[in-house]
Image 1 (cartoon, rainbow, N blue to C red):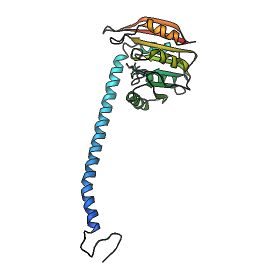
Image 2: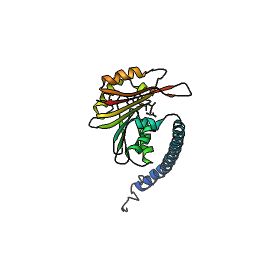
Image 3: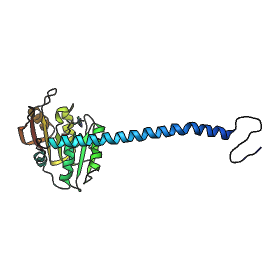
Image 4: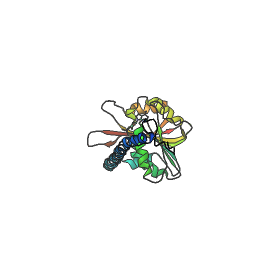
Length: 235
Ligand SMILES: C[S@@+](CC[C@H](N)C(=O)[O-])C[C@H]1O[C@@H](n2cnc3c(N)ncnc32)[C@H](O)[C@@H]1O
C-alpha cells in the first residue's frame, strides 16, 4: 500500500480516488470549455449590439439637431460654467450630453429618469466623452429624488406629457432649486395624453414658479407636431 499526496492504490479493490478525480476532471473540462465559448460569444454579440445601438442613437440625434433648436432651449436655462443643472426625464441623454459641455468640468448635470436602462446607456455614452460631469439619478413617479441638491436650472424636455403626477413632480423640483433658478419646459402634445401650455402654466404657478416667457408655436414640425416652450423662474 502506498500513500502519497493522493491515494493511488487501494488494497481492498475499491475504486481508486485518483482515478475518480481524473474522471471528474475529464467530464468537467469540456463543459467548462463550452461554457467559456458561450460566454465569449455572448460578450462579442453584446458588444456588437451596443456599438450598433450607439451608432443608431447618434444618427437619430444628428437628424434631431436639424429641427429641435436645442441651442436656443439651452440658452433659455441661463446657465454659466460651474452651474448645476437637472435634465429631468433625460432618457438616453440627448440634452444631458449637450448640457455637460455648457456647465463644463466644474459644473454638474443631474440626469434623472425612471428607466434604469436609459440611464445605464447614458452613463456609457458619458464615459466616452469629456467632461465627466454627468450624474445619473433613478427617479420615482412622483419624486425626482433630488433631496439635498440645489439646482441652478432644470430642463424638462419632451417629458412633461409622460408624467403621471406632474404637479407633485414640479413641487419636488421647485424644492431642489435655488431662488431665481430657471425651469424650461419644452414639449409637444402627445396624441394619447394631450398637454397644453395652458394647463402647464397653471401647474407651474401652483408649484411656486413665475412665468418668464412662453412660445406656443416654438417648433412646427414637418410631421404636424407643434412644440411649445415655457421658461419659468423659481420665486
Ligand atoms: C420621450 S423621452 C425624452 C427624453 C429626453 N428628454 C429627450 O428629449 O430626448 C421621456 C423620458 O421621460 C422619462 N420619464 C417619464 N416619467 C418620468 C418621471 N416621473 N420621472 C423621471 N423621468 C420620467 C421616460 O422614462 C423617458 O426616458
